[in-house]
Each structure stands twice: as structure tokens, then as C-alpha cells.
Image (cartoon, rainbow, N blue to C red):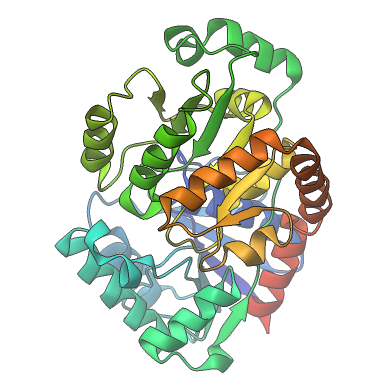
Length: 364
């Protein structure tokens, strides 16, 4: 079988969730699909050995124009799209991963054009894809709820986790030399609560900052580190930090490298993930890997990912959020128990398992 894969988001220099998923699932499928011909479509040469790579250069509307034309002229037996958007022309079989429908819950977090494009592309996928893969039961239910997607079209495949290849020696080097740590004076002994992800409205960071402001009244030595690129709603976050006069207490280093992220995880006291909506929640698994107690929202798919290994909070209640921070810092036995449960839970999420399940769906 000839399997075409949209690899346009493979190996992004500043990868976030969707790019990392594309990277891992494509590598996994190449490894698992030895008896099939894989053809990767991309905007530029990817340099992956042992697999065909067709470069389709285009500056704008790559999926809707360029990939659509290729599907009309030279269709594979099946097309797999690791992100939200299908081309307009499709082969006889197509499979797409829809990561989430956050735009339906948090419309104000998206621009007018973003919302309508995501809404249209999701409707198109529900109508035209042969199968839709989702990373959680919650996302599958949302597709049925908002788009009347037939349940038989939906397949749930949880994301995997690969331990970052960052040694203790590399982490120590980063702690000494990285501008992130030198500029903000972060050391191994600095007590801080960490968040990792895009700094945008749906991550609920304004409430996190306000809850942290209350937490600091009894823990003035702590800082809050928000590591990630700026997104929609960042201005509101900055206004909250300035309003509360917390510029010295809330650290926002921007996008961090894998080595910097590993160092931040390794030495944080608590990992906080108060998101209002997620399709999966990979940072929770990263926190499990670094054996950190997790404070998580009890919404959408997050209980599916964290199981019984997190301290859950109502993301709309600042006092509950503050109390969660207090408990994870003060109750060492509780934090230790969550770390143990998280370490065990992490074993269930492997990219090899994801690739096998995905290949079965693609070739069925």
C-alpha cells in the first residue's frame, strides 16, 4: 500500500504540540510500516533516509492549493494528515488527526479568521475523512457534540512520550551558560512553580498568576516561571503581572530549548497546568518523567492523561488553585505519592504503541 503523509509540520525549529506529534508519529510510522511504501509531502527537503520525500514548494495555502493539486494528479492509496486540515482533493481513503476543538469552547481566544478557518476545516474533515483519529475520549465526544461526527468514524489513540535525550551534564551546562538562567538568576536552589506551553488565553495563566500572588503571601521566596512562546491573549497576561506588581516574581523567558526545558523541569518544585481546555496535555507527561508533583485542571481530557497522579483543581477558582499549590508544597507525603503514581502512569504512553495503532487504522 502506498501511504502518503502530510509532513509539512515535521521538525519545526520551534516545535510546539502539533509539530512534536507530527515528528514522532511520522518517525514511528516509518519504523512500523516496513511492508508499505511511504511518501512524505513537505514544503522543503526533510532529509529522512530510507523514505520517499516529495517537495511541494509553496509560500501560501500549501494544503488547500498545492497538496490538493497533488492529490488530484497523483493520489496515494491513503493520505494521513497529522494535523487539522485536509486538502480539498482526496484519495479514496484519508485519515486525519484532530487534536482538539478548543475554538468551540474558547472563542475569544481566537481571532475572527482563526476561528472560522478552524471551524470550516473541522467540518470539512468530519464530512470527508474516512477516519478521524483523536488523542482523547473528550475530543471524540466534542466532535460528536459540535459537529455531529458519526461515532464510527472516530478512533481514540493517546499520544506517546519519549524521554528527552538531555544528560545531567548538559543540564548543568545550561544552568551555567544559558541566558534564561543567568538573566533571571535561576539556580538549582531557586524555589519555583513551573508552567510550560504557549502563553495564551486558553492556558488560563491570568488566573494562575493571581492565584500565585496569593500563594506568595506565605511563600515569598517562590517564583512562577511561564516558559513558552507568546500567543493570543498574552497582553492580558502582561497587564495582570504589571497590575499585581509581580514583574520580579513571574518569569517569562519565551520559547526555551529542549535543554533549557529539561533544566526547568528538573529543578521546579511543582508543575502547574491550569488549562481551560486541552486535546491531550503532553506537558503533564513531561512532568511525570522528571518526577514532579502536578497541579492540573479537572477539565476536558486532562483526567484521562493524568489519571490519579495529579492534584486537581477547578481552573476558574483562584482560591482552590492557591490551595492546590499550598498542599503540594507543604504536604510532602502527598506530593511523593503523586510522583510515584505519575512515574507508573507514564509507562502506558509510548510512541511505538501509538505508531502501531495508527498504522492499523490507516491500513484497515
